[in-house]
Length: 425
Image (cartoon, rainbow, N blue to C red):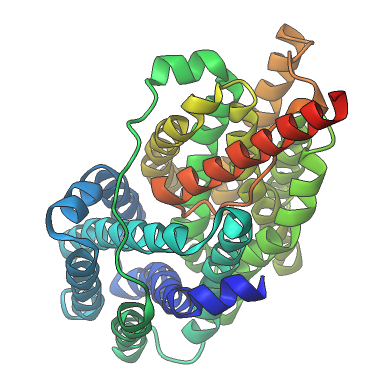
């Protein structure tokens, strides 16, 4: 771990600052939209626009990098992010915010792809898993820190919009001045969706449903909090505890996933997260219960993301694993785009606690589907000891980080095969 920090500290520091900026703007827009009097539908479209831009960039940002290079793309997208953050309070109109969110979603995805390719190049095969873990920790820590900064200013003013703009601008200094020369950039052609669905229907359905859950957490938590009458400090704590729960439970769940049937773990985690959301739906207004629900949903849904990727790999040939990551992220992205729209409708027609009803339906739906798949195929066809290793990966990861995780899976599988041959000899 120390060796990874020594070689990648500048990149990780820059990503930490970027994630503070991204986490701050997501919560801040939800709060500022309430001040500006935006309707729930308008806010849901605005929040959904980020995921549309992110998904769009996952296809076109690699083309830009190959055409003009890592450094130029990195600098151009970073400048655009900084400019959009400043323009939010100056152009407080739903149409302007929607366009801004599309742009920021596109730019952040491009920045992540660039940074993740640098990180992958800097990490040796031996330390790639540790680098991925550190990257995930830095991402979540940045989002948690952002929630604290929200409480330090007035959401109706300009200062809180200036802070993320400055942080994003400063984030590029340590990265561009310290990282090694940009690596050759290549992406794997995605595996056809039909083949991916045939290989693991549970993983594909799970990624789609989790897309909606993540979009609700990342995009609509502040909107929900404002509609529920929570204070700025309580909303910040709500968002923070979601990611703290994910960070705390990610590694224990990863350890467990390598030792038991993953379908039981998928079912159990989905049921726990769904039950946590259901409690706040049935007993709305209790801040303590809301925070417990946030911790349970965050602590189960984020590890489920990596767990579903690992589960899909159990049914894929080694040469198809990297290609599968693109298809799984596409499915997740479609769910994420639809998520805020449905949550907005729930907030208008069910009430503020409809936010939890939406999450509960998706999580319990995943648990039910996992149970149905287990009944349909009692023998999963893969022995627990033969499964690929779990690798922690955040839901905000791009196809590059997902492919890095796939490389960790493949390397672990090769090691297992070599150990089996040595034992047999």
